[in-house]
Each structure stands twice: as structure tokens, then as C-alpha cells.
Image 1 (cartoon, rainbow, N blue to C red):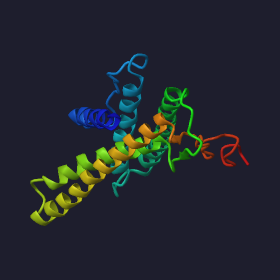
Image 2: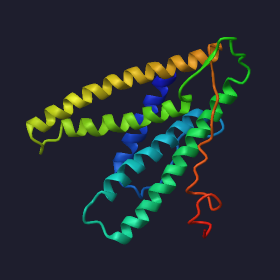
Image 3: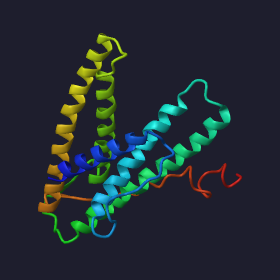
Image 4: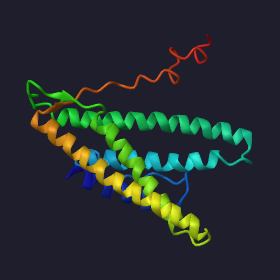
Length: 201
């Protein structure tokens, strides 16, 4: 099932990142973009999310130097754009994969594309990893550990449900019961022509 593959790759990414646990470490994708395209995209997607997760931790430091914070904010903005682009690449993969499918007469559209659901699955993998850390943190109180364990149980259940929903969506598209329609994000604040500040008003 597709979600099994995605979850395995996301766990692989998160474990690899935490070997060095640094936002400045080099990115090396072990999956070939020609022969293992979807694996390549899933790995890239989760790596972006993992680095950004830690950017968001760093920028919340109350003692961070303002100049460093501004530089980090721009890195977060660039990461968000990279994340969006990668989601759209994943949807392009599925559009190509299902291009020969003729939707049934009564086929319906989903509220989100497959890739945006996969985006949520990637973020969920990070929540699970870090909540598990908190549930087992030796310097935390027993109360803290128990609260985090309860939250972890919910996150694990959510992963089961979301994984199933993604698999069902892909099966429905493949069978023609649903059809894909992808809207590009068209972010305006990164565009020199659409952001009045960037174009000098």
C-alpha cells in the first residue's frame, strides 16, 4: 500500500536527520529521481519538513539575536516555498500516473489532492517522533511523560486513519470513482510583481 511506503520513508528521513540533528547538515537523497521518482519526492518532502520543524524551534528562542531571527525567518519562508513546490511535484506524479484513467460519470472530487494529504502525513511523522521523545524523556516529570504518552496514542491512531484515507483516495482515483484536479498555490508574497513591497509599490 502506498501509505506504508510513505511512512517508511518518512521514518527513514527523520532518523537520518537526527543522526547529526543540525539544520545546517547537507541533504543527500538516497533515491534516484529517474528510477525512484516518488520515493525521491517523498524523501525530499519529509527532509524539508524536518529541517523546518527545527527552524521553528530555534526561532522561538526568546534570546535569539534579532539579526539571526530575521535571517532565519527568510530561511523559513524559502523552506515553505520549497515545501509547496515539492507537494506540487508529487501531485504532478499522480496526475501522470492516472492520466489514462477515465472517471466514472458520477465521479467526485476530493477536498484535497493526494499530495496535500501526504503533506499532512509527513508532518504527522514528525509529531509522532518528537512526542515519543517527550513521553520517554528521563528528565521530565512522570505527569509530563503520561500526558505526552496520551497524546502519542492519539497521533498514532491519527496516522492509521490518515494512511487508510490516502490509500482509499488513490484506489478511488485509479478506479475512476474520484478524479484529481490540482490548483497551483499561486503564493503572492514571494512574487516581485504581486507583492507591492517587493515591486517598490
